[in-house]
Length: 220
Image 1 (cartoon, rainbow, N blue to C red):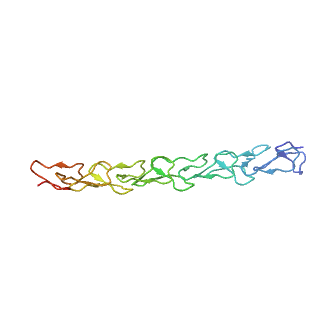
Image 2 (cartoon, one colour; image 1 turned 135 degrees about the vertical axis):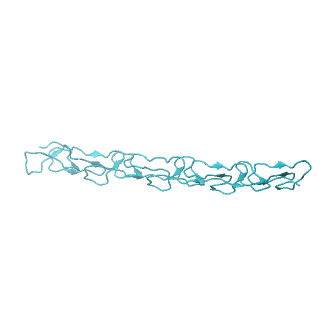
Image 3 (tube, helix red, strand yellow; image 1 turned 30 degrees about the horizontal axis):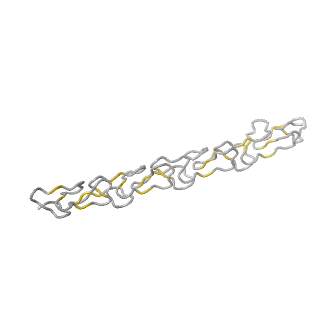
C-alpha cells in the first residue's frame, strides 16, 4: 500500500510513484492523484501529501498548476492562497510585480485610475499636498505654480495679482495701482498718492505742493 504523497496506478503493484506536478495524494492506498485546487500548487519535487498555498503577492486562478503567478504591476494580493489579485484603488499604485500592497504616490503626483502601475505629476497650475491624490487641485486665486509635480502653490508677490484658479503666472499691477502679497486684484492709489510704472507694491505720497486724483501715475 502506498503512503500518502505517493500512488500506484496498478500497472506495477510493487512500485509507488510520485504525483506529477500540480497534483497530490492526501491518503494511503490511492490509485491516482488529485488535482491541486486554485490558489495552491505542487512543483512535483517530492511526495505531495497536500498542495502548497500561493504566497502573498502571487495567485493561481486554475487548478493543477506547478507554481503560482506574481501579481502584475497595478495589482496586489495580501492573502495566502489567493485565486486572483486585486487592482490598486485610485490614489495608489504598484510599479512592479508580486506586491502585497499598493504604494501611496509621492506628494505632487496623482493616480486617477484603478490598477495603475505609476503615478503622474500634477500639471503646472495644480498641486497635490498629500499622498493618495486621485486628482490634483487647482491653485487658488492669488497664487500660481509654474512647475509640474508640485505639492503647493506659490503666492503672487506684492505688486502682482491673479484673479483666476489654476494659474501658472501672476500679472503685474499697472500704473496708478498696487497690491499686497497673495492678491487677487490690484488696488488703485488713493488721491494724493501715485505709483509710476508697473508692479508696485505700494503707492507714494505726492511731493509737497502737488496733488493727484485716485489711480494716478504721477502728481501735478
